[in-house]
Length: 414
Ligand SMILES: [Cu+2]
Image 1 (cartoon, helix red, strand yellow):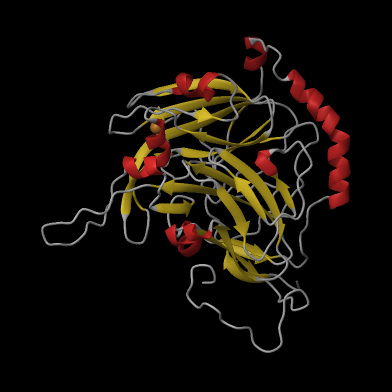
Image 2: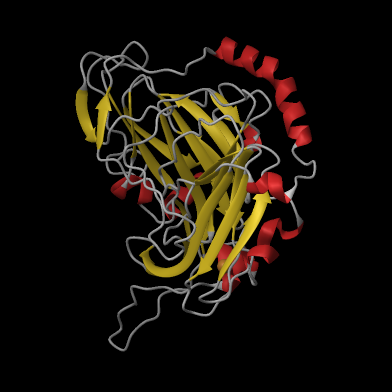
């Protein structure tokens, strides 16, 4: 790619350096604004295509050589740790990111006492172009913030309940070890804060969600997010040019009420019967129909490597995650970042409660559609776009004469 082409409104992000736009908030300020990585505004295509710091062969050899030391390290993590040792850990505040963004990689090589603040709220969100819906949130976003930690860290989680409807809330995190995944230790009533501590005994990408009763309702209304526990002892994943956070989930609602004037309401209510039947009204990426299309398409430049942390909050459907026209050069199946990744996979299965990590190299510019390949769900909202800018590559994908327009205006090829 020649020259720096200013094509989109988002700055380049080299994932081994912190973003300029990150902010922090201390745990001692549970009512302050949540710490987030804000949406960048400009994308600049670099003069030279970026690639991972290791070739595939090098990556494989690297993983093989470090696997033993990683496993030895993880085997020791569940040994009893004294209060003094925990108190003496370096303390830091986690940088949280709102979807589709991801906090910068952790570069320290030692464990830390990592403070995370989550606050529960409710908000009336534009779920679909037609309907608004009251979502239950962590930090006022659906999905909740992306949290990044390192294996061996002790995560100090403060949950503050600002839900004015009186519902208790908590955190069940699949990275936490112990009964309930932390739910009983973190249950907070209205206007209450609870702080609990969890040692992260293993790396991986994990769902967290509310598990207050009735659990299906809290998940169905939007209370979930991802925690990435980075590998330690040299097992870090290869660097990529861009990282994104995508969460699939379903919403179940009743038909709109009809007013005295005969007009249907623009706001719909949760439907427990539809949830029981496992018949969602809406299936979306990042909390609403259009969150990754009209509002915030993902962006990259041709030649760049893109990593997607993909979670499926469900609560019912298994996803067949696929990016139309691309390929997962590395697929960390089931969120396993210790084993060597699968290679050149087209579609990954992600059940409810699970997450995965996939890496792509964007070779040909254009619009790529993220879908659940259970493809009728496209018409329930499960579509996202990854816009890739750059020089055309007819040697990879080309035709004689102008390309056709098979389906102008369709959801997949808009
Ligand atoms: Cu809840």
